[in-house]
Structures are given as structure tokens and as C-alpha cells.
Amino acid sequence: MTDHTIAEEQDLDGLGNFLTQIPNILWERRWWIVLPTLVGLIAAVAAILAIKPVYQSTALMLVQSRQLPAEVTGDWGGEVIDRRIARIREQVISRPDLISLIEKHGLYSDQRHSEPLSDVIESMRKSITLAPSVVNRSAGRLDEQTIAFHLGFEYAEPIAAQAVAQDLMDRILKLDAAGNVEQATNTVQFLSEQATSLEGRIREVQDQIAQVTTSNGQILSESGVAMMSGSPGSYDVQIAALQRDNANLIIQKNAAESSDTRDPAVRAAEAGLAAARARYAETHPDVVLAKQALEKARELAASNKSKLPLSTIDQQIAFNNSQIERLNAAKARDLASLNAQLAAQSRAPLVRQEISALQNKLAGLNDQYQNVQTRLTTARAGVKAEDEQMAERLSVVEPPIVPDEPYWPNRLLIVALGLGGGLGLGLVLALGLELLLSPIRGPHAIVAITGQQPLGMIPVIVPGEADQRSRHARIFGNLSPFTRLKMGG
Image (cartoon, rainbow, N blue to C red; front, side):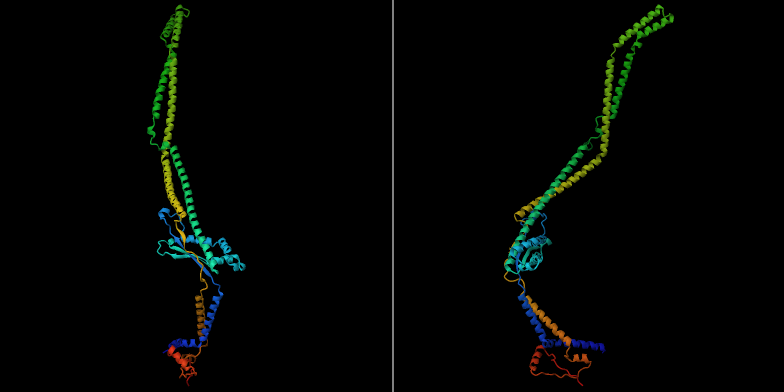
């Protein structure tokens, strides 16, 4: 067997020997345990007498469910109960509210003389408790689990604690009711403004559609170029016919105006004069007679010319010219209309697309308006339910009462802590002293010191201790008594 194995066995034997000696060690050093325990007990009693008692007045508030189904009042944005209580708590523990409670009930009179007001208010905040008391674990949603809240206030005087807790409870109930009504009213006001805004936008879109339809009615109508009453070709035919009539009339007029040179009598007289001149001199009687006959023929032709209807021809020509101007104007108008219709037809797809976009926008606004109207109706029902206390609200299950016993200190706990602390300190001192002094309590200690096995052990029996040790042996078992060891030769 190696030295390392022997050393390990010796260490194990020494540990086992130490464990078997613990009862003797505790008994021998019992005063190191008893005295700290007594000190801890005395300190606990002194703490109980020195600590000023604190009373707590509590109230239990139940979250009353709505008495109407959600289909009637609708989910108009009611705040989750946990967040609503957290918001109410911040209002309750605000500085003005706490100062008013301190002044009303005369709280913390000693601290107000020795500490700043901010520290007093912070102490009062720490004394107020508002937390969930009962939670419904089977609720389907997390925001519906809390069904009750616990309100508490701690103070050195029980009557003042109950009065402050009562005021806090009334304040919480008032804030909860006012907050719900205010939120519901604000929701109705917001939805009403939104509905009014949507109505204005709907009217604007309707006016835009009407304006586009009115300004582009010809484009949107089913009639096209083929539905025109006339065409440029028909105007040209009529104008050409009138122009031909005028040409004929002008020819007739010119012929009538030149009829004195073309009259048969004039031509005959001219022919007789030419024949006479061919035979005779100018002074011959036949030539003179021929000249006179020509003059008379011309006079007769002139008189016949004045009798021709030339004014009627001029009137007909003027009428034909006016008809030509009218037809040209109508032709220009029809051409302009045709060009406008062609341009309009080229813009027709864009106009229809614009109208379609406006109609889609109008449909979306109408859907939004209907949705807002539905929500507005349910929100008004929610306001009505709040006014008649039929919606979700807080109700008092257990009002605050004057506490009979102090909330703090916990006497049993302090005594238990004092005894436990003293006993633990005593055990630590006893075992620490044992490890520090390391007395010889068996052959293993001698082996550890000298490295040699003892030859034997001689017991030292003190008179009067035999009965006591026998009693210890019966209690603790066959344990080695405290002996002085003597090494053999």
C-alpha cells in the first residue's frame, strides 16, 4: 500500500472521528452556543420593544364586468384594467394628492419637523399598496385575468390608516368612473369629427366627378362623328351649285348689258351703212340715210335694254352669295366641331380613367364613413352604458376598517430570527474555536501530529463525572470519552 493511500485513509478516519466527536464538542463548548443564543433572544425582544408598530388598513376592490354584451357597446377602445389601475395609481400618489391627504389627516407630524417634505411624500408613497389581489388563470386573454385589486395603507395609527385608506379608495373609484366616461366621451367626439371630415371629403369627390362629367359630356356620350347632321362634302356640292348659278346669271347680265350691239336691227343698219359707204362717198344721200337708220336702230335697242330685268338677276346673285357665305360658315362650324370631337375622343380614355379613379376613391371613403358610423354608434352606446354604470368598473367588496393588530413588526418572526441568528452564531463560534485550538481527541490526532501509532490509552476519570459520562454514553451511543492520551514506550 502506498503512502498516498495511507494518507487518504488517515484523512477519512480523521473526518469520521471529528464527526463522532461533534456532540462532545458541542457539549463542552455549550456556553459558546448558549450565550449568543441568549443575546439574540434579548436583541429580538429589544427590537420588538423599540420598533414602532405599523398598522395597515386594507380594502378589496372587484373589477365588475360589463352588464351588456360587447355586440351592444362594442370594443370602443376601453383601456385594459391593469393599465388603467396603473394610471390611476400614478394619479393617486401624485404630489398634490398626497400633500392634501397629509394636511387633511395630520400625518407624519414628527417627520415633517425633521425631514424635507419630499422625503415625507416618498415615505407615504411607499406606504400605499395597490396591486392585483385575485387573478383568473383560466381567462382566455392576458388583459382579462385580473379580477380584483388590493388597496392598503400603512401608518403608525390605526384610525388614521383607515381614514387615509378610505379616502384613497374613494379617490380611485372616482378616477376610474371619470376616466371611463371621459375616455368614452373622447372616443365619441373623435369619431364624430372623423365622420364630419369624411363627409366633407365625400362631397369634394362627388363635386369633382360632377365637374369632370359636365366638362367632358360630349366625350362620355355615345354619339360620335357618324351622328353629325352634315359633312364637309355636302357643303362643297351646295356651294359649287350656287357658284354655277351665279356664273350663269352673270353671263345673262352681261349679255343683256351688251344687247345694243348685238340687236338684229342695229346689225342690219350697220351692214346697210357699210354697203353705202362702199359705193358712195360720205356725203352721198344714201350714206346719210344709212347713218340715220343706224342711229334710230341704236336708240331702239337702248330703249329695249332698259326694259330688261337686270335687278332681279342682281338680287339672285346676291342671294346666292349670301347662301354661299352661310354654307361656308356652317362648313367651318362643322369642321371645328368635328376636330373637337376627334380631339375629345382621343382624350376619352384618360377622362374615363380619371372618373374611375374618383369613383374608387369615393367608394373607399363611403366604406370608411360606414365603418366610422358603426363605431360611433357603438361608442355612443358605451357612453350610455357608462352613464348608467353598466360598463366595466371597480366596485368595493371589502371596505377599509380600523386594524386591530399591527402589521409590523412581526413578533414571532423577529423572535425566530433572533434565536436562529444567535444559535447559528454560537455554533459557528464553537466549531471555529475547535478548529482553531485543535485539541487531541483520539489516536488519529496523535498519528497526525507524531506520525506514530500509540501503544495504548489511559482513561482519566474525574470523580463525580462517571454517572454523567455514562448518561452521555447512553444518549450519544458508544462514543469515545474525553481522554488524555499517553504515548507508549
